[in-house]
Image (cartoon, rainbow, N blue to C red; front, top):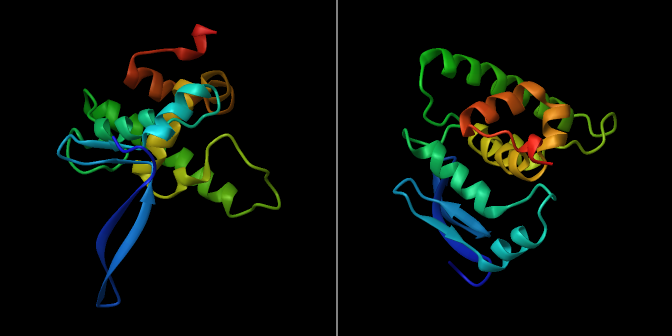
Length: 161
């Protein structure tokens, strides 16, 4: 746990040229089971429940995703049928988010944060934040997505209100 945002440096290769990329982060999940968090962001997430942003939920969703290998947006599920349903719903929602973001003049900001369009792993982490922080809105606006998350987490936070 760091007091605030922290900087990570990673080698990046683009077009055959290797360079170091510096990124400022509030959290990071490693495949070896480690999680790095900025304490000020942890506190902000706890102080503002319901805003849809929580670095702890986000990074631990990545941990769940990485439990069966590389982060790919599909955590360990019990059956092949569960993977098929998960994949269909998540891909449809991911594609819909990217489609909406490509048309900012037609659609205002939606419930799902644009960062979720980065890749399927980030999508799972971002919608996990919403599942716990804004479950009623997620269930109303994205019922199939909410259903998959509810089945995975074995919880129904929309019913808690």
